[in-house]
Length: 315
Image (cartoon, rainbow, N blue to C red; front, side, top):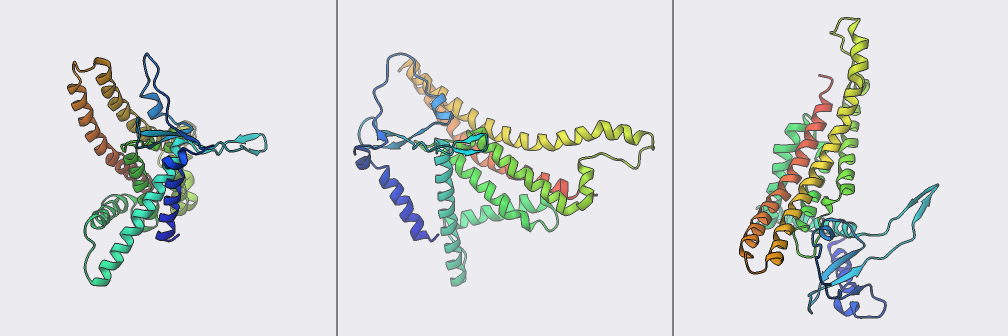
């Protein structure tokens, strides 16, 4: 897909969700009704998935609520799979489109700079520096020798997680990495990458990472330790992707809960102490910006370490 066609596609999506279309008959977008009296939950709708998204609007309350289409489920034998888009799925699409667009622009800026005999400037230079740092200081030292083949996947994972984390901090956005299904999928992809890397690097010796057999132990102890340690080795394999999924999910969800709780205090106490929660929420948002980068970095670092460990398991 060329840059022009990608921009055209995004423009059509924006036009379809624009206020002019929202006012038409049969549109899924509408101005939300006035709130009811009593307590209002502002935390749960933000951190959970749903079948609607919010887009900016020029009239009060300055946003439209758009219900996403509901598709017919797909039947695979006895299973019924619902592939209807949700809020977090939309954020995944937006994140992928933005990441593709940004990297395409960086590539073109780099090509123009090389043609002129110079280096990229501005944002392209910053992203190139980030790519080189993650590649040279995080991925290759931990993956080990001949680890270039793992760079594309790990860089993609880093920038995709970072993009999704940052989109959660944008007004009307949502944090897809605050969905356990998203983080579990990322962890499963890393798990498969780790195990395939182990099979390719160790061959038959890969079985030693599952079945514990220590030739240095006395012969009577080997079967006993095999029965005890083999389940431990298998549990150790499964806890790595589990830790990756839970760490990313919990950190991205917790930060948003704290911010929304502090903002809720402003409405709870009125003008009495509204300044303090506002300052605290602002500081937490700054911390969340740091956490967005940190969690992407940690996921990439741990994935690189796990790949390096299993590739060197025969040593």
